[in-house]
Image (cartoon, rainbow, N blue to C red; front, side):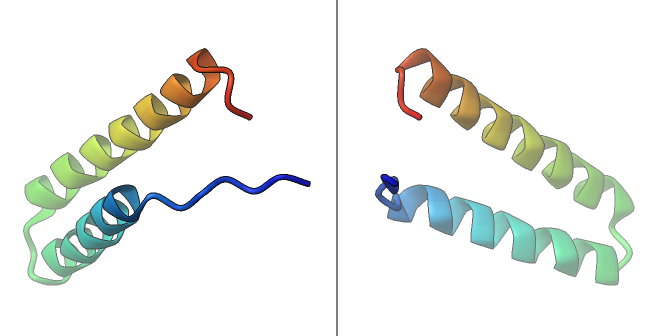
Length: 57
């Protein structure tokens, strides 16, 4: 079983956007939370698409 190397930049991006998203929900900024969530889903989807196109998996 081969594991992928962890990219620190991607890990920080996901962690920070997740934390900001939770804070936005708690503080009542629903539009901001929805925007962050859709951006995060798009980022993760694009990341997987790049991985599939490069033959990594």
